[in-house]
Image (cartoon, rainbow, N blue to C red; front, side, top):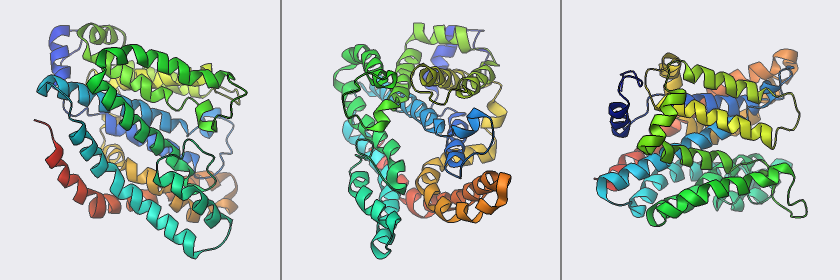
Length: 358
């Protein structure tokens, strides 16, 4: 894993296939979740367009998820001769459901005993969030953030099944699906009452992550990616490209600007997984980044609850309000996520061994 990718391409491909844990992905998750927390910690008062686009952290999450889940499925098929959907869904359920439904029950219980517009919004949104349908309907309250988790669940329901039963057809279907989900962002289908999220390429990054998994799994595809992104500084170049694309001063970045961001994020993920010794390794593998990445799921689940109490107390701080709100929300949510992980989630994660493949 530590050899120069240019020194022995065939050997590096074999080494890539043996990697069980990609060392930089938790650090990338940390960047993604911190961007999302920044976005929801108050209104940015800076003049830099990037400061108002922390929502792009979800796009980075999607690229990572699509790549990692499908890479694991492909390797399971190579190792065992097939894909066990029962074991896959068992592992996913143990990872996702406990903290998710704990959060929903907590927020729902508060909404039942309290009155006011916020509670009414939660009561309206609750059934859609509980059924992972919140990306398909207009959501009104803090449970609106579950739209991204709904996208993930719909991805889990569809892609593993296609990987198991329609592998060859899937490689043809995925590029077509990517084009299809991108069309609404160009103002097409104006007569259709599409949910807002369908006009923001929400499925696009996951599909690109899946395509990256297949590209890197193929020897020729892997070598082509290495020829482009196998040099040590490629991760820095890809990050700078993503920042540049995300700093587009245009108010509406749907369409080509958002697609350019997605491809830059794909390049960032690719440059961080095809070799371990890349230029961002020391940053992404630092303990705080790795730990935040490990509990990033809990941070995403709980950060709006924390922000509901923190941000009103920082609004009087003028130009420092957003930064102060972000710092308070980030620290308190990290603590809440750690408690959730240690007290609740880890108990269920230990059961995942029952669903491991041989």
